[in-house]
Length: 281
Length: 321
Image (cartoon, rainbow over all chains, first blue to last red; front, side, top):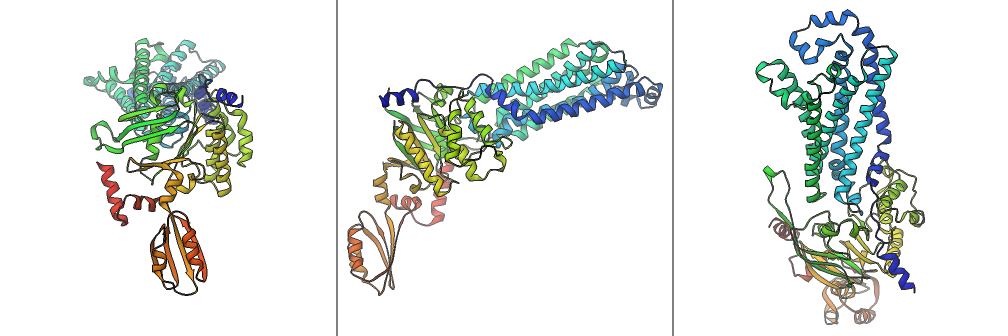
């Protein structure tokens, strides 16, 4: 009788992880950091957007830009700085927005698997009844949700202020820029995560994704400046994001599709390797 | 249902590190490990550091994939069954690391959610037993307190099979005893316990059998009692006056007798009866008997040179092959 209850307790009803258990755990432990990042991104967006009536609309900025070297105007995207779309293109969406989101996404991406593995934290999780694919996809999804949250903050704060300041920019233009920003950060963050998952090396993951981001920024700038190098803009993810001037001309579907494809391919490649390799060596 | 909890045949593991364009030469960590652990037994897995204990264990947990050989556990092969197999296992890593920002309680509850909630109800009870404060962040915990978290997460869901890598490291003697009680309870409850250590004394109280691994190979699988008999004890005696060495040299089970003035040391295997009675004929001032370390055991089991450098170089050779 006693033996029966022992046997029944110890066999049969093997309980494995619920769907999204890892995802929830990751987000839970990132709550604070997510909040702080949201505040930082909101502040940066708010500062830039609220300066527009004072800087962009006034002729001062346009005349200032007119005196800059042509190449610099081109690189910084200042040629349209007098319009709301052009202003946002070269400020929030041109430099600081992507910089913040990329740092966030690449940092998270390289830490969540490779970083945890190097710190030895992943071992307990991986030896629980949860498959490698489950761990990988949950952690990927958590990073995506984090990046999406920041992108949403950019959109919400910018939209709110544009309306409040009575600046004329269609919500669809802002959405086009935000989706591009989101996909660029997702692509680079996913490359960081996938590289880390494939190799278990956080430093390598960080360097690969950050290097790619910088190279694609430079390629975008060079491609726009030098006639013979125009092809660079067709291969640079940065150009896929901003090359179509989404805040002026709206959704650049091919560019967005390319960013999304890059994200998915990186994710799949990382998963394939992560399922096969030795962990924690 | 078979009676074997863990069966390992000819397990070979090569490590290759570095990126594809600069691969290191493969290091063979396991040279063909064979193990058979029966259901319901407490099995000790002994060996010096770097012998391949953790590597073997990590293959069992599917963290590492075997280069060659066959591994079969309670519910199948680790790489094939995956999560469903690990659901029936409790594992304590040899090097335990946990995210610092969570509290001990949060960490344990999180790990329970990875088991579909199994074990959540036992967290409080076990924490009390091991005097662990669940509200403190992991970051601020001492090594011993972290180890308690590790022990609790391994036992809380009452697994069929416990795989414990150096479980008592960091625990003070009182908690070591509490831990050994937990192992006995699990065994009484029908569980199989597979625990590694580099010291025989840590496992001998609970383990029925032990396997000894050395340089990636199992060199002996034996009853604990037999092994203890082989290991023997180092006995030191001090007399009021010098004694005749020959008197002791002829005693059964007594070896390596060395006299130095009024002190006498020897290696005792088996019953101490004859030695005690002979010693009692003299005036004994001091008596000590110490179990020998496992390292000593290796040295004499395999008649290896006692020279440290020789052993070290032999290990390097075994690893580098």
